[in-house]
Image 1 (cartoon, rainbow, N blue to C red):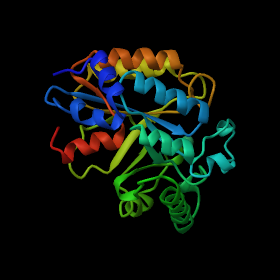
Image 2 (cartoon, rainbow, N blue to C red):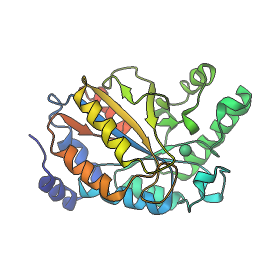
Image 3 (cartoon, rainbow, N blue to C red):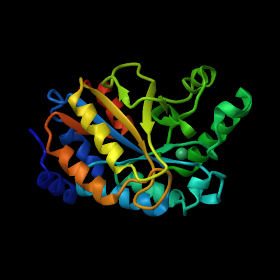
Length: 261
Ligand SMILES: [Zn+2]
């Protein structure tokens, strides 16, 4: 059974987005292509809008947050927009969206000694454990700042997290047991509508797999913003395709445990 948009909205009206997970996972046999758009940094205005657009289509968004972003913790010029705090992150999580860690203060962990990098990741984990309801690192994906990681750091992250998202290349094999290192691509600093549209078209024309694309803010926020109108139309178009599934990263990995892929 394909859940069309009207059915999704009916289900949405009946309760929380979390309830969608069951019916939407009902028939994975036909799914050959999974698309995960992974929104980084935690801009307040963009995150609210992103969640609303996903909800309109009966979908869960995938939002990755800098632990100290709302306290001005990042020096990156592309994070110079208001960031939300954990009251919004808890609210969005309750509504069925995935809220995942994206560093403590957006430092490039490959540009410092390994022990210092581990210390920053530990501090990020501490903030999430304290502030985000129901958070557990071993059920989460750590989204590396600048998609930068080293083999040594990745080996250590594997002892802490269920998965990591790092660079580079949007194509991943379909979710499978033991999958830990997920790669993504990204684009910027200008608007990414055209580039993302072309990447998705290329992906859908190619072999079966899982596309993970690292987006940031919407409209005028962040590095490589995406237009909200484009996102809305894109999700509408993808929802019409029986063989395509739009999913957050952990939700896609969960389907393996549930033997849905
Ligand atoms: Zn970032």
